Length: 92
Image (cartoon, rainbow, N blue to C red; front, side, top):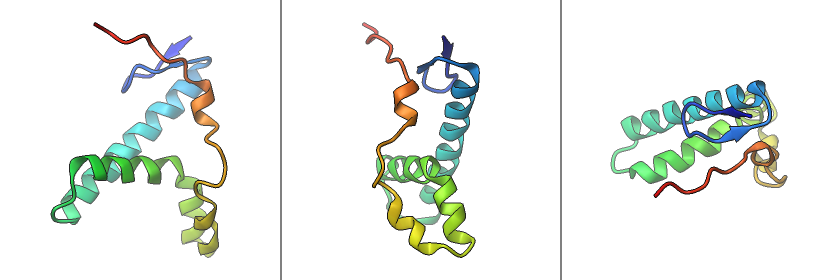
């Protein structure tokens, strides 16, 4: 079992843990960008949008490269990433 540095989620492999950590880092930077550029956006909304963008970065790249219709695929498939996570028990 491998633990993600950012949120302490547990994974079956180091590769999965590292990928999750990188996704969270990208999400954090998207969130900071949104907070900086959009006056009045809440921290929670910026975080949620940052996670959405980060989890779907491959689709966003495809959209920017000339396939804008690919954005319509976001949310149509179940998230596979979550299946690798082993939740930690709540800390007291």
